[in-house]
Amino acid sequence: MTAHDLAALNSATKYPSIPTYHRLDPRNGGLLEEPTRFIGDVLLTEKVDGTNGRIVLLPDGDYVIGSREELLHAKGDRVHNPALGIVDELKPLADRLRADDAQGRVTVFYLEVYGRKIGGAAKQYTGGSGVGHRLFDVAFLRPEDLDRSLEQISSWRDGGGQDFGDEPALRRIAASADIPLVPRLATVPGELLPAAVDDMATLLAERLPATRVALDDGAGGSPEGIVLRTPDRSVIAKARFQDYARTLKRRARR
Image (cartoon, rainbow, N blue to C red; front, side, top):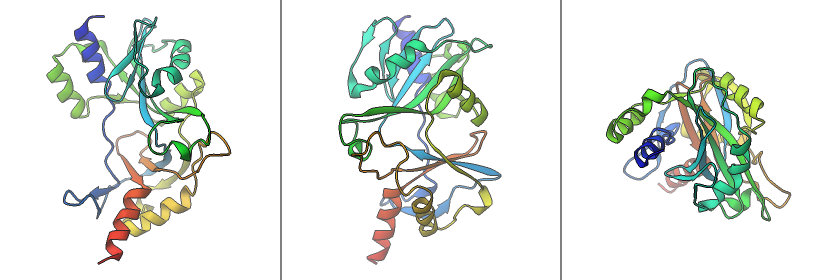
């Protein structure tokens, strides 16, 4: 695989930013009373506070492991970057994955790696040295998706060109590969989701009073938030405890 091939693969498989459920005020970072509009059922899952990792599985069984921004490792120890412990945690999983996509596509597994010394919230998940991973998304690439310039790939990705799996596909792949998913909390009708910032803060507290992915009894247990998504993943948003706490605290000072 050439340097261009790797650069193209890296760009095409970067995970996009998820918008906040209530729009952020660009002036101060607070939340505005402008919620994301969902129609139909909405799946609520726990948002785990660690670092994003990805396993890019090629049709021939080769793979690379990456962080959110860069590729860190290629099968056979051709490249190895120990950054954030991502490779050490995900390599055993990558080694046992089998390419079985009937359409010959590249399969990208997006996982949250969390626990020991990973990010500022590490102690919320472990009181010792525990490290874990949870699958939160999967995407598919066709070979022709990579036959573009790096500028074209970046524009394609930023324009929503990546083909993400829906909820049934994600569950099927997780079960087949025996990969733990981020916790499913509930499925609710979109029209019943809170419109007001303070009501969404209440929903967070009710639906996720403590993390469901603690690695040991010494974990602090405070969760980061919830991801809301339609089953087909056409609409997705995140709601973080700290955003709502900060916004409501600022409003209380007025």
